[in-house]
Length: 233
Image (cartoon, rainbow, N blue to C red; front, top):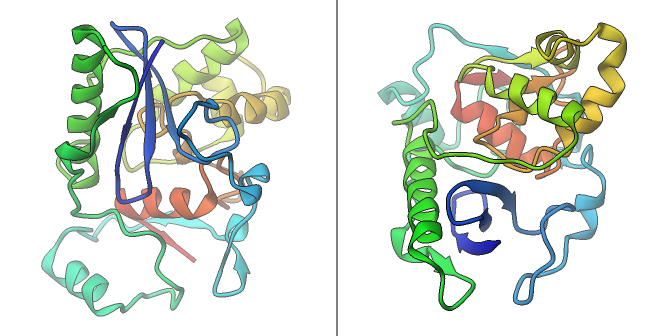
């Protein structure tokens, strides 16, 4: 397995590749990020995927709703973002809208890194940059994940969630061919998703629409949903 790091508006990202596929994508510091020489250890607050506060309110309780008539990148909305105005009167989450990833920030962690792995890392960085800039809603980088058959069913179901849409854990279970009674183990499998953003576990909410949890940190889930046009309060 080969590894590379890239910077992003939501913090440094670790990528893993077998030389042909993208096998892992983690925010550096999240609990299940591979422990490698040169990387900081997971942050203490990352131990709890439901942790995080904004304006003194637990982020896990925020509810996400779609604003069908709102252009997130339209002039009026960008002006509100730049001025710091927010319809929910909450502190802004980490900004990621309209920010490109710096191509010079790509760092290969092994020498030498084969050309196949470099190509995967470069494609991943390019596609993530386009996603953060609002130019991409689907990813084309080839993926390969390791896990149990149950986990793979859940992760395939996650890939079917369209950009800018949300589902509940029960919805994921049904899409994976399971029953609503599998909600808890489905939640565990969602939490062990090895490829953040591209396998979009951030689009899974509680049945009431609350953010609930996110291994990469709820501030990031908040920001990703905002990027995709959700209103959160």
